[in-house]
Length: 487
Ligand SMILES: Nc1ncnc2c1ncn2[C@@H]1O[C@H](COP(=O)(O)OP(=O)(O)OP(=O)(O)O)[C@@H](O)[C@H]1O
Ligand SMILES: [Mg+2]
Image (cartoon, helix red, strand yellow):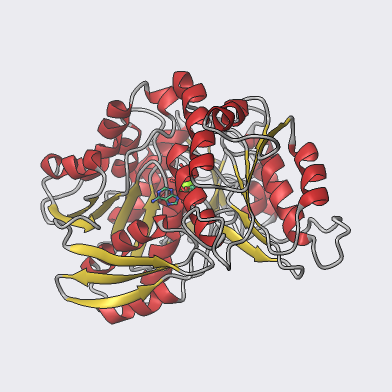
């Protein structure tokens, strides 16, 4: 972190010192990791004691001290380390993070929101920006009122760019995050139906997502996906300059001539106000094109030359796990593990990528076409829309001519009935109760040359299933499920 004395930590958080006097607090400098998990503590660091649902972080202050933390922020006095005692830990986290950003005038903060693709875009932008200058971005999908401050604390005096993923489960959440890390650039990817159960309506989601561009200063830049009408409409809600990105003719940063190779990786013609280029992405699925356009607009605004941006895009590797993670098995089966999360939009995107990887746009009769399997679990947080949305994904799988649909678990069951109503017959669409049953079916029936997609909402069972199926094929014993994660 940027160095702070403990006296300054007390001042910015409005907390009181315990265990040391003012003079000692002014001399005690925190410049190591600021963490809420004592196991991540380190020399010179600050431990923040949160009280979670299961555990009280105050029990781990001594553990943090043993790993080198020099002070703690707590809500009650603790004697294991000098501490700053605050009334509200969340407010303490938020105000300290804000102070870090304010102390770093040369930092450019880029906020990213949307219903789908925040983490994918964050990873892509971080890899492009870090090719030019030190960049901090969240690990995995830290996008909440705790995750954003923890990301901010990783900024050090050399950091030039801070990429912040901003998630929302209600009105006001993104506005709160923008007060912690005020962005100069705001990327709005899409307004979908993720978490519609909590928001109540898609309109409410649009209102919540617009809070990012509303927080931008006049000197800032709003990057808006022109292909999503709800995002396009946000142009009228921001004081900042607007850069439209997408495939529509209005887009200043535009993709055309999009093609997918046999692995579902997109190539497209990129047009920007500063020049054109052909871009090939090493990521799978057409939905990454829109994410990449937003990255191009933000990186141009950060001052990177177009050719450097295009070069960095071409070498980007997926940094977070279970997002269109492709494994080619030795026996010729291709496994696509996209089981990190799912909502109707990302389900549709993944199914289309599966079709491309199968060798065509639904044509099961081309010479190079492969059998395609969609192993789909439930989409959560859809509220009243749940049955209809699952049903329509099942229907889409049939319309796309996916060879086999395996629906896993009770909530997802309407996918199977939707597929049947759309005209699937026999065993094309089957329902199984759980990942174990899906595993048994797949080990029995997968054949060399098949492409199999795994996707569901935050379902450890499906991630495990995808990992396990990916690890098979060489020896076919199915016992190696130990692939390392990167998140
Ligand atoms: N632009 C997009 N449109 C639709 N789906 C997308 C898009 N970008 C990524 N996806 C897919 O959506 C799923 C979630 O992606 P990602 O984790 O990047 O989203 P997120 O917005 O960070 O989600 P979360 O709200 O869970 O943090 C993945 O399956 C990914 O392949
Ligand atoms: Mg995310």
